[in-house]
Image (cartoon, rainbow, N blue to C red; front, side, top):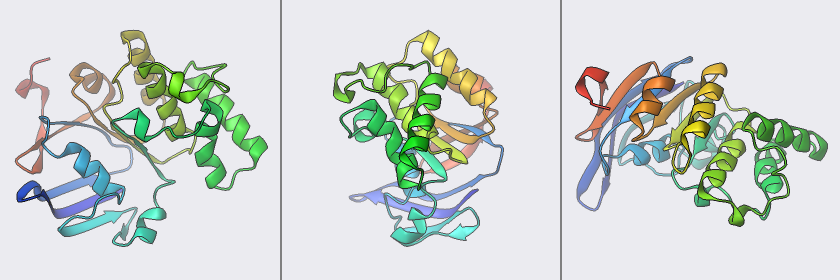
Length: 220
């Protein structure tokens, strides 16, 4: 699904990604750990085409991606949960935010409303359709952001700090949703308990590269 080779990217004179390689296969449930500033979010943005690497190859769904049109082809197939919910929610109401993706993928308004209803219900957000987005709590915004991603019925999820603002009960519910889905996904989080319970392969970002990791190297 995703194949990165020798990716290099820097801010100023500092390389945050320096010869990074990554392979993500169908069915993968990946957890990615790393310290603040290690390049985890930058990696997500490169996969989505929001940042352009200085060098290296980005191949997604079997095709090398270089131009904006290349990445536009895959954004309906990869669901990306931004680290900050305010970067994801921009419409006045929850209904409009969650319906935005399906409508842009060609769904009819009636079909989009049905998708919104079903998606909100799956996240225990029944009745949120007419809620004003900016008035939601931080945890509610996080779940609505997740709804905007799931409503597009992606093949692969990239979740950047998905449990930010969520209480323990809601985090448990999100784990159940992920495990019951047929989706491949990569979770980036400092919530190691969440990663441990929702993923089957652990990676670590360090010194600009990704390497395999295991829980014996980390303490919860």
